[in-house]
Structure formats: C-alpha cells, structure tokens
Image (cartoon, rainbow, N blue to C red; front, side, top):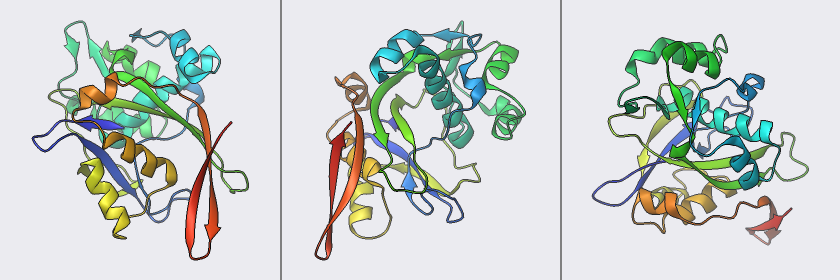
Length: 236
C-alpha cells in the first residue's frame, strides 16, 4: 500500500484491474504482483532492515524474504512509477529518467538488481513496513501466498497509471474507497477491504508506518447465509 498525506487525511494509491486479467479481473487493488526468480539476487545494493529481519517478520526463510522485498520495490515501480530507492544523497525525488528501465523491467529484459547496479542506486528497505500475509482460500483455481507492505510516497515522486494491468488508477482516502465499494461503484477482495478498513483508522501516513504489526498468515473464506455473504478469517 502506497500512502500520501493530504489536508483531508491520508490517501492510498489504488488501481482497477482490467477485465481481461486472469486473477481479480475488474477488482480495485493495491499495486503488486509476483516474485521473479531474479528477485532473490543477493548482489542487490540494499539499505535498511536486512533480509534476516524481514524473514523474522514474515516467518519465512531469508532468501524468500529478500525476494519479497525486492518484488515489492520492483512491482511498485513497474505499476505506479514510484521507486523506493536512493543514492548517497538520499531518496530519489524523480523517476522520469528511468522510464526505459521501467519498460525493460516489465518485459523482464532487465532484473531489479541489474537496474539498480547500472544506475548506481540502492534499494531502500527502510522505506517499507510489513503489514499482512494473506493466502487465497482453498478451492480457488489460482492461489497465492501474498505479503502486504506499506510505504509512503517519496517527496517529489508521483504515482501514475502507466500499466497495462489497470484500466484506471488514482489516490483515494481509504474511507472513500470503502464507500465506493459499499455503493457498488467498485469491487474489493476481502484482503483489500479489511486493509482499507485498517488504514482508515490512521490520521497520517507516518502513523500507519509506525503502527505495531504482528504479521500472521490469514486465509479468508466466504460463508453464505441466505442472501448475504460473511467473510470468515482463519489464522493458519
């Protein structure tokens, strides 16, 4: 989840997936995607909590933890143009100069490690916080073990909708996104709905990043009761 502060409270960057997508078609989601095997590259320049710390937070092995953080940074850049990386002088204030590299990352012609090394950039793991671990319910044709992160939009950078996976993109207050879903103007999966509900309780992006989180593996299931559907969360 990518957050920014406004005079009306924090906003989160959301995308409505194109209807041709094999998974979550037409759903309103946070930017994200799958791990590339090259995201495990240990040569990536890195600052912030080490992979061992992320492994503890997400209760997984260190190579996977490294890949998860790298995938989060890479997918955020591919899908929104926001790059959680920096140089010796600090966090990047603009990413427009990396437009060609962004396209090469999307096409998998370029790996994240090679991109960062070629541009003299360092992955800023300190800009990310672990948030949740959701598992697709059993019985679904496509299942994922997804980790959720939260980060604040770096000063000077802008988020865009320049991705073929989304038909629209933009910033919304979490409570407004929830209101759209309740009114039938958008559709949310249970993890997105619950996460937006959690984010709606914060008065600033900094508060959300500072929140104490214990990441547990959660699998939702849908229980139909007459004409209503209830979401049941099961800790694995």
